[in-house]
Image (tube, rainbow, N blue to C red; front, side):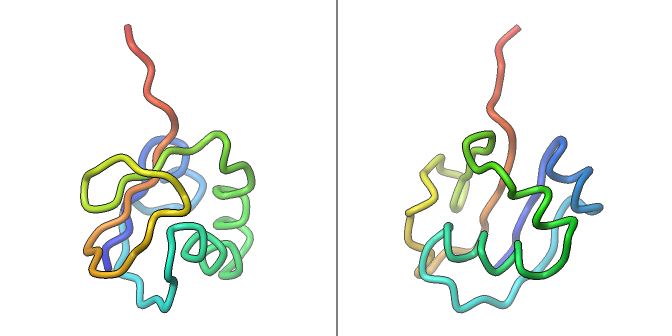
Length: 81
């Protein structure tokens, strides 16, 4: 699946997107797999309260299932202005 990173998440990880082979059943499981990769992922996903997630371009929560998903995006909360 494609995993996309935006704003400071992208800056901490070092690239905007990647293809990920995963056995994760939920977004939270995927986050745990990513955290275990290396320190930059652990830093990016240290505080999930400061992150939002979308699965196939629909906002969801970290307990959302990944069955059939093609894309997961991580980004900080959006602010108006």
